[in-house]
Amino acid sequence: MPSPITVGVIANPASGRDIRRLTSYASVFPTSEKANMVVRLLAGLGMLGVTRVLCLRDRTGVAALLLRALDTHDAVAAQQRWPEVEFIEQPITDSVADTHAGVAAMLRAGVELIAVLGGDGTHRAVAAHCARVPLLTLSTGTNNAFPDLREATVAGLAGALVASGAVPPDVALMRNKRLVVRCTAGPNRGREEIALVDVCVSRQRFVGARAVSDPADIEELFLTFAAPDGIGLSSIGGAWAPVERTASHGLHLRFAAPGESGVPLVAPIAPGRVERVLMRTCERFEVGVWRTLETEHGTLAFDGEREIELERGDRYEIALDWEGPLTVDVERTLRFAASRQLVREVANVVAHQK
Image 1 (cartoon, rainbow, N blue to C red):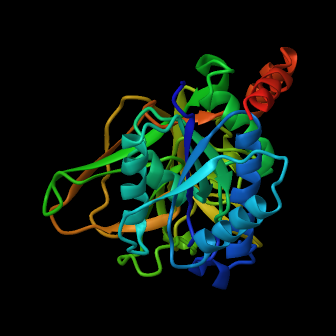
Image 2: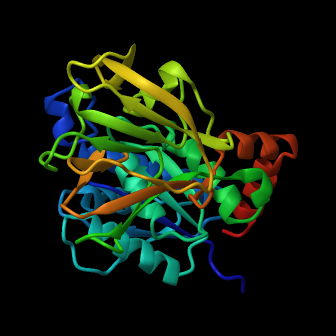
Protein backbone atom coordinates (compact mmCIF):
# COMPACT_ATOMS: atom_id res chain seq x y z
CA MET A 1 0.00 0.00 0.00
CA PRO A 2 1.49 3.38 -0.98
CA SER A 3 2.46 5.71 1.84
CA PRO A 4 0.09 8.65 2.41
CA ILE A 5 0.86 11.93 0.70
CA THR A 6 1.44 14.31 3.60
CA VAL A 7 1.34 18.10 3.59
CA GLY A 8 2.06 20.44 6.48
CA VAL A 9 -0.03 23.58 7.09
CA ILE A 10 1.19 26.48 9.20
CA ALA A 11 -1.36 29.25 9.73
CA ASN A 12 0.12 32.01 11.85
CA PRO A 13 -2.65 33.06 14.27
CA ALA A 14 -0.98 36.45 14.84
CA SER A 15 -0.48 37.48 11.21
CA GLY A 16 -2.65 40.31 10.00
CA ARG A 17 -3.18 41.65 13.53
CA ASP A 18 0.08 43.44 14.33
CA ILE A 19 0.67 46.98 15.57
CA ARG A 20 1.05 48.38 12.05
CA ARG A 21 -2.74 48.50 11.88
CA LEU A 22 -2.55 51.37 14.35
CA THR A 23 -0.28 53.39 12.04
CA SER A 24 -1.69 52.42 8.64
CA TYR A 25 -4.93 51.36 6.99
CA ALA A 26 -4.08 47.69 6.50
CA SER A 27 -6.89 45.17 6.26
CA VAL A 28 -7.44 42.80 9.19
CA PHE A 29 -7.29 39.03 8.77
CA PRO A 30 -9.63 37.63 11.43
CA THR A 31 -9.23 34.19 12.96
CA SER A 32 -12.36 32.94 11.21
CA GLU A 33 -11.00 33.80 7.76
CA LYS A 34 -7.72 32.01 8.46
CA ALA A 35 -9.65 28.90 9.46
CA ASN A 36 -11.80 29.23 6.33
CA MET A 37 -8.67 29.51 4.20
CA VAL A 38 -7.33 26.28 5.68
CA VAL A 39 -10.65 24.58 4.92
CA ARG A 40 -10.53 25.78 1.31
CA LEU A 41 -6.94 24.59 1.11
CA LEU A 42 -8.02 21.14 2.33
CA ALA A 43 -10.63 20.97 -0.41
CA GLY A 44 -8.01 21.53 -3.12
CA LEU A 45 -5.46 19.20 -1.54
CA GLY A 46 -7.94 16.36 -0.96
CA MET A 47 -9.44 16.46 -4.44
CA LEU A 48 -6.08 15.57 -5.98
CA GLY A 49 -4.85 12.90 -3.64
CA VAL A 50 -3.30 14.43 -0.50
CA THR A 51 -4.44 12.08 2.26
CA ARG A 52 -2.82 13.55 5.37
CA VAL A 53 -2.36 17.09 6.64
CA LEU A 54 -0.40 18.12 9.72
CA CYS A 55 -1.39 21.35 11.51
CA LEU A 56 -0.40 23.27 14.63
CA ARG A 57 -2.58 24.01 17.63
CA ASP A 58 -3.04 27.59 18.87
CA ARG A 59 -4.82 29.56 21.56
CA THR A 60 -6.54 32.08 19.29
CA GLY A 61 -9.15 29.79 17.77
CA VAL A 62 -7.85 28.84 14.31
CA ALA A 63 -7.44 25.18 15.26
CA ALA A 64 -10.78 25.12 17.13
CA LEU A 65 -12.67 26.51 14.13
CA LEU A 66 -10.91 24.05 11.85
CA LEU A 67 -11.96 21.15 14.08
CA ARG A 68 -15.55 22.38 13.95
CA ALA A 69 -15.42 22.48 10.16
CA LEU A 70 -13.99 18.96 10.07
CA ASP A 71 -16.79 17.67 12.32
CA THR A 72 -19.42 19.30 10.10
CA HIS A 73 -17.83 17.84 6.98
CA ASP A 74 -17.86 14.33 8.48
CA ALA A 75 -21.41 14.70 9.80
CA VAL A 76 -22.94 15.49 6.42
CA ALA A 77 -20.86 12.78 4.67
CA ALA A 78 -19.80 15.27 2.06
CA GLN A 79 -18.93 13.91 -1.34
CA GLN A 80 -15.81 16.02 -1.51
CA ARG A 81 -12.80 14.23 -0.11
CA TRP A 82 -10.69 16.01 2.49
CA PRO A 83 -7.39 14.77 3.88
CA GLU A 84 -7.15 13.39 7.39
CA VAL A 85 -6.03 16.25 9.64
CA GLU A 86 -3.65 15.65 12.54
CA PHE A 87 -2.48 18.22 15.06
CA ILE A 88 1.15 18.14 16.14
CA GLU A 89 1.49 17.82 19.89
CA GLN A 90 3.91 20.45 21.15
CA PRO A 91 3.90 23.23 23.77
CA ILE A 92 2.19 26.47 22.71
CA THR A 93 4.32 29.54 23.43
CA ASP A 94 2.47 32.09 21.27
CA SER A 95 5.82 33.00 19.73
CA VAL A 96 7.85 32.26 16.62
CA ALA A 97 9.21 29.23 18.49
CA ASP A 98 5.91 27.47 17.73
CA THR A 99 6.59 27.84 14.02
CA HIS A 100 10.20 26.68 14.30
CA ALA A 101 9.23 23.60 16.32
CA GLY A 102 6.27 22.87 14.06
CA VAL A 103 8.38 22.93 10.91
CA ALA A 104 10.92 20.59 12.52
CA ALA A 105 8.13 18.14 13.46
CA MET A 106 6.71 18.28 9.94
CA LEU A 107 10.08 17.48 8.43
CA ARG A 108 10.44 14.49 10.76
CA ALA A 109 6.99 13.32 9.63
CA GLY A 110 8.10 13.38 5.99
CA VAL A 111 5.89 16.11 4.56
CA GLU A 112 6.18 16.67 0.82
CA LEU A 113 5.15 20.33 1.07
CA ILE A 114 4.39 22.99 3.67
CA ALA A 115 1.56 25.45 3.03
CA VAL A 116 2.16 28.71 4.89
CA LEU A 117 -0.59 31.20 5.72
CA GLY A 118 1.00 34.39 6.99
CA GLY A 119 3.01 37.45 6.10
CA ASP A 120 6.63 38.01 5.18
CA GLY A 121 7.73 37.35 8.76
CA THR A 122 5.92 34.01 8.98
CA HIS A 123 7.40 32.83 5.70
CA ARG A 124 10.84 33.92 6.86
CA ALA A 125 10.44 31.86 10.05
CA VAL A 126 9.41 28.77 8.07
CA ALA A 127 12.12 29.28 5.44
CA ALA A 128 14.82 29.29 8.13
CA HIS A 129 14.06 25.65 8.97
CA CYS A 130 12.29 24.01 6.00
CA ALA A 131 15.49 22.83 4.24
CA ARG A 132 14.55 21.52 0.78
CA VAL A 133 10.84 21.02 1.46
CA PRO A 134 8.96 23.41 -0.85
CA LEU A 135 6.55 26.05 0.40
CA LEU A 136 3.08 26.91 -0.85
CA THR A 137 2.79 30.60 0.04
CA LEU A 138 -0.48 32.32 0.99
CA SER A 139 -0.67 35.89 2.20
CA THR A 140 -2.52 36.75 5.42
CA GLY A 141 -0.17 39.37 6.92
CA THR A 142 0.78 43.04 6.54
CA ASN A 143 2.96 44.65 3.85
CA ASN A 144 3.38 41.29 2.14
CA ALA A 145 5.88 41.07 -0.69
CA PHE A 146 6.97 37.43 -0.54
CA PRO A 147 3.76 35.33 -0.26
CA ASP A 148 1.09 35.17 -2.94
CA LEU A 149 -2.32 36.76 -2.53
CA ARG A 150 -4.57 34.14 -4.13
CA GLU A 151 -7.54 31.86 -3.52
CA ALA A 152 -6.61 29.00 -1.18
CA THR A 153 -8.69 26.43 -3.07
CA VAL A 154 -6.68 27.02 -6.23
CA ALA A 155 -3.42 26.97 -4.28
CA GLY A 156 -4.48 23.64 -2.78
CA LEU A 157 -4.93 22.09 -6.22
CA ALA A 158 -1.45 23.23 -7.27
CA GLY A 159 0.02 22.07 -3.98
CA ALA A 160 -1.47 18.60 -4.41
CA LEU A 161 -0.04 18.30 -7.92
CA VAL A 162 3.39 19.12 -6.52
CA ALA A 163 3.15 16.94 -3.41
CA SER A 164 2.02 13.93 -5.44
CA GLY A 165 4.74 14.40 -8.06
CA ALA A 166 2.19 14.77 -10.88
CA VAL A 167 3.92 18.00 -11.95
CA PRO A 168 7.73 17.72 -11.93
CA PRO A 169 9.75 19.97 -9.60
CA ASP A 170 11.63 21.66 -12.45
CA VAL A 171 8.27 22.96 -13.71
CA ALA A 172 6.42 23.58 -10.46
CA LEU A 173 9.08 25.02 -8.18
CA MET A 174 11.22 28.13 -8.15
CA ARG A 175 14.29 28.83 -6.03
CA ASN A 176 14.32 32.15 -4.20
CA LYS A 177 17.09 34.49 -3.21
CA ARG A 178 17.72 35.42 0.39
CA LEU A 179 19.80 37.90 2.36
CA VAL A 180 22.11 36.54 5.05
CA VAL A 181 23.34 38.76 7.89
CA ARG A 182 26.02 37.52 10.28
CA CYS A 183 27.89 39.04 13.19
CA THR A 184 31.64 38.46 12.94
CA ALA A 185 32.81 40.41 16.00
CA GLY A 186 31.44 41.90 19.20
CA PRO A 187 28.98 40.79 21.87
CA ASN A 188 26.71 39.08 19.31
CA ARG A 189 29.47 37.29 17.41
CA GLY A 190 28.15 34.17 15.67
CA ARG A 191 24.57 35.36 15.34
CA GLU A 192 23.08 34.86 11.88
CA GLU A 193 19.71 35.89 10.45
CA ILE A 194 18.07 35.68 7.04
CA ALA A 195 15.55 37.79 5.14
CA LEU A 196 13.50 36.85 2.10
CA VAL A 197 12.74 40.38 0.89
CA ASP A 198 14.63 43.14 2.69
CA VAL A 199 17.14 44.02 5.36
CA CYS A 200 16.88 47.58 6.66
CA VAL A 201 19.54 49.41 8.64
CA SER A 202 17.41 51.70 10.80
CA ARG A 203 18.53 54.82 12.65
CA GLN A 204 16.07 53.93 15.40
CA ARG A 205 18.17 52.75 18.37
CA PHE A 206 15.64 50.35 19.88
CA VAL A 207 13.52 47.48 18.57
CA GLY A 208 10.39 48.89 20.21
CA ALA A 209 7.24 48.00 18.28
CA ARG A 210 9.45 46.36 15.61
CA ALA A 211 7.80 47.84 12.52
CA VAL A 212 9.85 50.31 10.44
CA SER A 213 7.23 53.01 10.06
CA ASP A 214 9.13 56.32 9.83
CA PRO A 215 10.93 56.77 6.48
CA ALA A 216 13.41 59.15 8.13
CA ASP A 217 14.73 56.17 10.13
CA ILE A 218 15.86 54.27 7.04
CA GLU A 219 19.63 54.50 6.58
CA GLU A 220 20.31 51.57 4.23
CA LEU A 221 18.14 49.03 2.47
CA PHE A 222 19.15 45.69 0.92
CA LEU A 223 16.60 43.96 -1.33
CA THR A 224 16.38 40.50 -2.90
CA PHE A 225 13.81 41.84 -5.38
CA ALA A 226 11.83 45.04 -5.87
CA ALA A 227 8.47 44.89 -7.63
CA PRO A 228 7.13 48.14 -9.10
CA ASP A 229 3.66 47.20 -7.81
CA GLY A 230 4.85 46.05 -4.39
CA ILE A 231 4.15 47.45 -0.96
CA GLY A 232 6.38 47.80 2.07
CA LEU A 233 10.05 48.76 2.14
CA SER A 234 10.82 46.91 -1.08
CA SER A 235 8.46 49.26 -2.92
CA ILE A 236 11.11 51.99 -2.50
CA GLY A 237 13.47 50.02 -4.71
CA GLY A 238 10.61 49.21 -7.07
CA ALA A 239 9.94 52.94 -7.50
CA TRP A 240 13.48 53.55 -8.79
CA ALA A 241 14.98 50.34 -10.19
CA PRO A 242 12.62 47.34 -10.27
CA VAL A 243 14.28 43.94 -9.85
CA GLU A 244 12.58 40.63 -10.66
CA ARG A 245 12.63 37.69 -8.26
CA THR A 246 14.48 35.74 -10.92
CA ALA A 247 17.12 38.44 -11.52
CA SER A 248 20.71 37.47 -10.78
CA HIS A 249 21.18 40.41 -8.40
CA GLY A 250 19.47 42.46 -5.71
CA LEU A 251 19.62 46.13 -4.72
CA HIS A 252 21.49 48.21 -2.15
CA LEU A 253 20.11 51.67 -1.42
CA ARG A 254 21.39 54.39 0.91
CA PHE A 255 19.23 57.24 2.18
CA ALA A 256 19.84 60.80 3.31
CA ALA A 257 19.73 61.66 6.98
CA PRO A 258 17.48 64.51 8.13
CA GLY A 259 18.88 67.78 6.76
CA GLU A 260 20.82 66.07 3.94
CA SER A 261 19.91 66.19 0.25
CA GLY A 262 19.05 63.31 -2.02
CA VAL A 263 16.85 62.10 -4.85
CA PRO A 264 13.20 62.24 -3.75
CA LEU A 265 11.24 59.01 -4.19
CA VAL A 266 7.60 58.33 -3.40
CA ALA A 267 6.57 54.80 -2.42
CA PRO A 268 3.76 52.96 -0.57
CA ILE A 269 5.64 51.73 2.51
CA ALA A 270 2.42 50.55 4.22
CA PRO A 271 -1.24 50.16 3.27
CA GLY A 272 -2.73 53.64 2.96
CA ARG A 273 0.65 55.31 3.55
CA VAL A 274 2.55 56.77 0.60
CA GLU A 275 5.74 58.34 1.90
CA ARG A 276 8.58 60.45 0.52
CA VAL A 277 12.19 59.37 1.04
CA LEU A 278 15.49 60.91 -0.07
CA MET A 279 17.79 58.41 -1.75
CA ARG A 280 21.54 59.04 -1.89
CA THR A 281 22.69 56.01 -3.89
CA CYS A 282 21.28 52.87 -5.50
CA GLU A 283 23.42 50.05 -6.83
CA ARG A 284 23.22 46.41 -7.75
CA PHE A 285 23.87 43.97 -4.94
CA GLU A 286 25.56 40.95 -6.45
CA VAL A 287 25.21 37.35 -5.28
CA GLY A 288 28.06 35.99 -3.17
CA VAL A 289 29.64 39.32 -2.19
CA TRP A 290 29.90 39.96 1.56
CA ARG A 291 29.53 43.61 2.46
CA THR A 292 30.26 45.11 5.89
CA LEU A 293 27.54 47.21 7.47
CA GLU A 294 29.27 50.46 8.38
CA THR A 295 26.75 51.75 10.92
CA GLU A 296 27.56 51.47 14.64
CA HIS A 297 24.21 52.56 16.06
CA GLY A 298 20.61 51.70 15.37
CA THR A 299 18.76 48.48 14.62
CA LEU A 300 18.57 45.86 11.91
CA ALA A 301 15.16 44.98 10.51
CA PHE A 302 14.41 41.78 8.61
CA ASP A 303 11.47 41.69 6.22
CA GLY A 304 10.03 44.83 7.78
CA GLU A 305 10.53 44.07 11.49
CA ARG A 306 13.36 45.35 13.69
CA GLU A 307 15.05 42.49 15.53
CA ILE A 308 18.65 43.40 16.37
CA GLU A 309 19.82 46.36 18.44
CA LEU A 310 23.41 47.15 17.48
CA GLU A 311 25.79 47.03 20.41
CA ARG A 312 29.22 48.62 20.82
CA GLY A 313 31.84 46.47 19.10
CA ASP A 314 29.37 44.53 16.93
CA ARG A 315 30.48 44.00 13.35
CA TYR A 316 27.87 42.75 10.89
CA GLU A 317 28.16 41.78 7.24
CA ILE A 318 25.56 40.91 4.65
CA ALA A 319 25.42 38.83 1.47
CA LEU A 320 22.89 37.72 -1.13
CA ASP A 321 22.60 34.09 -2.22
CA TRP A 322 20.27 31.62 -3.94
CA GLU A 323 19.70 29.46 -0.86
CA GLY A 324 16.22 30.77 -0.16
CA PRO A 325 13.25 28.37 -0.02
CA LEU A 326 11.74 26.52 -2.94
CA THR A 327 8.22 27.81 -3.59
CA VAL A 328 5.35 26.55 -5.70
CA ASP A 329 4.64 28.59 -8.82
CA VAL A 330 0.88 28.07 -8.76
CA GLU A 331 0.14 29.54 -12.18
CA ARG A 332 2.91 27.62 -13.94
CA THR A 333 1.94 24.39 -12.18
CA LEU A 334 -1.71 24.66 -13.19
CA ARG A 335 -0.85 25.75 -16.73
CA PHE A 336 1.34 22.65 -17.12
CA ALA A 337 -1.43 20.49 -15.65
CA ALA A 338 -4.03 21.98 -18.00
CA SER A 339 -1.87 21.32 -21.05
CA ARG A 340 -1.86 17.61 -20.14
CA GLN A 341 -5.28 17.41 -18.44
CA LEU A 342 -3.60 16.21 -15.25
CA VAL A 343 -6.26 17.56 -12.89
CA ARG A 344 -8.95 15.45 -14.53
CA GLU A 345 -6.76 12.35 -14.62
CA VAL A 346 -5.59 12.63 -11.02
CA ALA A 347 -9.12 13.41 -9.79
CA ASN A 348 -10.44 10.27 -11.56
CA VAL A 349 -7.78 8.12 -9.93
CA VAL A 350 -8.54 9.57 -6.51
CA ALA A 351 -12.30 9.05 -7.03
CA HIS A 352 -11.77 5.34 -7.74
CA GLN A 353 -9.73 5.00 -4.56
CA LYS A 354 -12.61 6.05 -2.33
